[in-house]
Picture 1 (cartoon, rainbow, N blue to C red):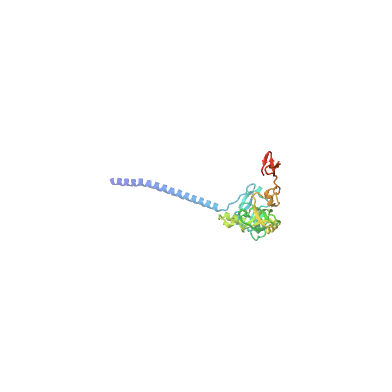
Picture 2: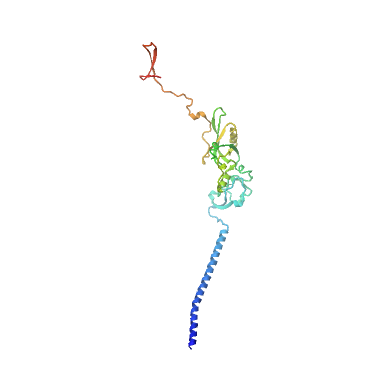
Length: 309
């Protein structure tokens, strides 16, 4: 009987120790299931986020806006167009006119005849159906001509007359027998300096590369955009004198008040050839005879004082 009771106690002890183990196993199982569920949920969320990031953005129309295309980067003159060069944007209706390009279909078979600026509206005035020979010819509007002149540090304003700047052309000559300075062209645009155009300089700066000294330094030649008449005047003047460029301000696009010539005499003012007027003097002359020698002598007096001049 004692042995049966001992066996019963042992079985009871084994049952008591099994219950905590079962509880621990159940808790571990629950935690495993919960962790697996959370992992699946997070993975699915990341996948959806990745798909959303990779999906192309859709521009939803808004009231008072118009969908247009704008260049992603600056497009130099003479360039043909590719779809990847543009992106779609919504712009207010008030800034979108009939001359604004709204879709890439309007650019097919066209070329740029001016610089198309990043994120700016594309204007049809900057487009042409004729493929330009080079970037310079694309920048010459109808009725104008491009003419190159030789310059140095002085005549190019220390090299500041770079592409895109506006200048006046001064002609200094002694062709008439006197040194004369004349303004023979006004508000001329510099198209290139040392064969480097405005668009090329802009792209080089945007790429982060340091410009070469010969590009942004003193150019040996510059090319100006002039009317046909002014281009002939500049070319003829170069045969009989020296040409210099006068740099204009960015906002100064008008004409000038004086168009005449200036001679050397104007450097000295209006009284150059006029005699200098001396102040009036009241001189009294008295003739006296020296009693010792008998010679006659003239004595000069001014305001009661003898003058010895």
